[in-house]
Length: 134
Ligand SMILES: [Zn+2]
Image (cartoon, rainbow, N blue to C red; front, side, top):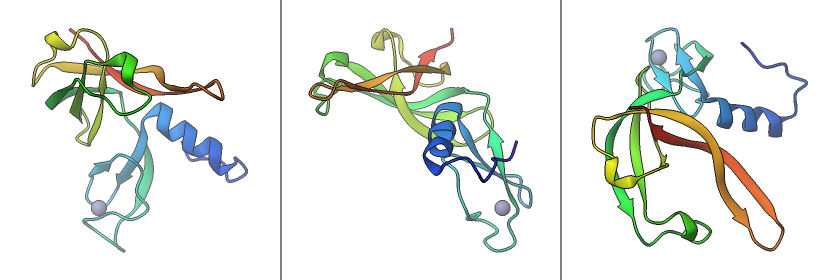
């Protein structure tokens, strides 16, 4: 579904971040996440449309983070993974739940969770994380 141009950029960015909206090239049929403005395969011959991913994928590789970056301390240890979406694009993300159950090749699905919290301002950022789906 194409975005209306009257929607502020901020909200469009938020929407694509939360809903796993990427780009599909109708010339070569490849999908991309995050969104691209130019197909890396077809360049000017590319014909790009918004593409809604299903939010399902599998773990390609992962690492367990025991010493996390600032703001993520209370989640440690946690697994950070490279995920291949069923539609073909790859992205990285945090796996929620018991990290000892995380294995390469296991199926995951996108979930909407708190990403971090700004202690001074009380700001809470939400975004996509991943959980094992079996
Ligand atoms: Zn293309």
